[in-house]
Amino acid sequence: MRKQRGSTACPIVYSLDIWGDPWSLVILRDVLIDNKRHYREFLGSPERIATNVLSSRLQSLVKAGLLTKTEGPNRAQISYRPTRKALDLLPAILAIMHWGVKYNPNTDISIPPLRELEENDDKLRVRLLAQFRDIAD
Picture (cartoon, rainbow, N blue to C red):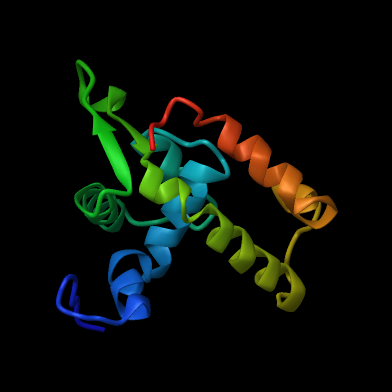
């Protein structure tokens, strides 16, 4: 799909232009669910994203206003945090996770956030959002 950001009236096309590729959602999952902040943490995800793809997607998510990038004294200390715009995606990400748990026979339900999702998704959502109380509306 060709990026049409800003030139479409369709909210689905607009949304998919920003976070519709699989890697962007994986990065958002890592930030919102697994509280990852640093490039090396994203590289450690089990999906094994390529370094060039990770760099590109992080840059795109910052440009789209979903992540903020904080520079440190060296490259290893650069960190990424979600914005309010990213936090507002949490219900959609949890809904996608519910769908995946239901239909993916390979889902490992023993992973703590997935177990929490199955037991009480509202409690999980509240717990996850509590990590980001400092993020302004």
